[in-house]
Length: 241
Image 1 (cartoon, rainbow, N blue to C red):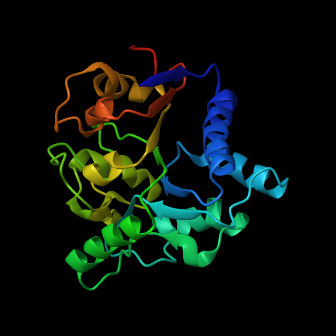
Image 2: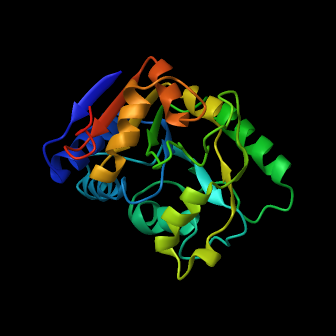
């Protein structure tokens, strides 16, 4: 595990963007696993700028997003499909047919999850997975107690996750109670990982994930077992280390 502590937000975003950019330069047809949320926004902004300057090319890249809310249509402002297109996909030269996001409106959830796993396998697996972490240690939407052997599945969201995500909705009652999420085993099968953690409110869970016991009660703790993981933190998130 490589641990990097950035001095400021600008450096944090730059290091993350450097990691993804290098992956693309090393393997122009890379398969990237992508996350949503506020943490990677700076990363995506930098990737957009680098693509516009011609420094990186997404024309051969395939992407797989980690998760999506159950029941939200693609054009809903809080759907992850909407988020990814707004902040990244609509601004870069990625091919639409190479973008993969779980379908939150699927009629058959088991089939959707199985097919998503098959798409990842058919693409050759994920070369680099970008990760964030929830206050309760979830990665993707794999909540505490999720088995490490879990593949992509429909997840019941934890009360703390619902409360945390309610800031994006008009009320907590509008937050979906379920989501489709790439499984922990699926994540761990990625060839390389970068875990991005920022904010003083993530310091405690950062410590548990990086230095605590490996337990399903802290899903991110399993990342300690991955042979090629970079953990990128800002000063605040690293304050308990």
